[in-house]
Image (cartoon, rainbow, N blue to C red; front, side, top):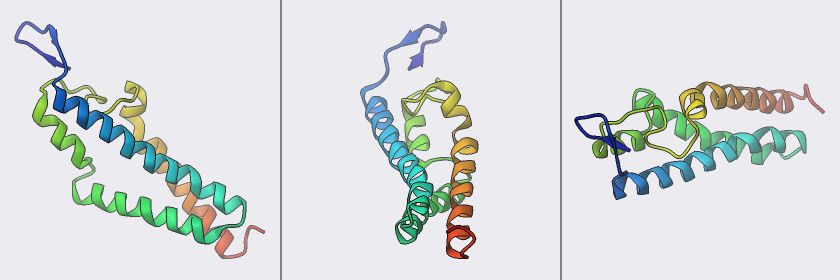
Length: 123
């Protein structure tokens, strides 16, 4: 959504809508991977949990290299000056605002479960 000089909302540019859809799909994919980690640990598929952990780790590396900003956010910023936390993704504002904290915590907990299963601390 963009705003004019009077602060009135204008329509969302078509390219921004495309980016938001793609960004939402990519986000859902990584959240699915994060959720799959403890699931596979619990059901004894450590190898699959490690694969999902590695996929998410690649995304973490991309975020670190991009100063903790998703590259899709940078692309979306070209199409609007209106910048609420969810300007670049179809998520509720509160989820977009705390996304990294919430899902980062779940990811670290999943990695700890992988470690615990690998070390034999979980049966």
